[in-house]
Image (tube, rainbow, N blue to C red; front, side, top):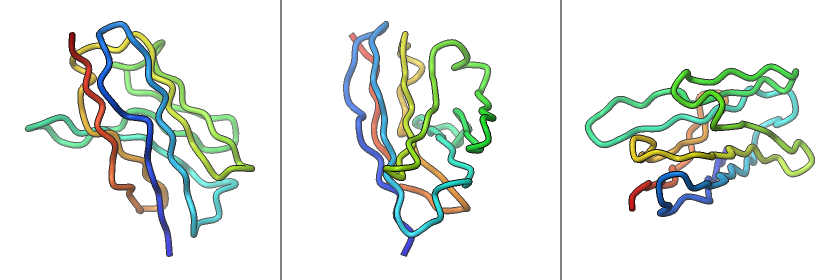
Length: 111
């Protein structure tokens, strides 16, 4: 049974930072493509970043220079370090791999 469990969301002020985690089980983590997506109220889900475990990462233009995706294969966990957060980053953030989705973690950026 595949499980992707996100954590680390919360309320943060503009300019602040958060680190999201996604713990995976039931998949062959090493070598898998792991992605972070987000969905804001009233908007479609969109790609934030993904990592291929071959040293290749891709970021949406709106997070380049602010967010960093990384992974720890020993822990079957992928991370999303989010810096310089903006109110428009407010969304539910989801982890995805091989067509499976986590339940999401809420990120709210507000003063």
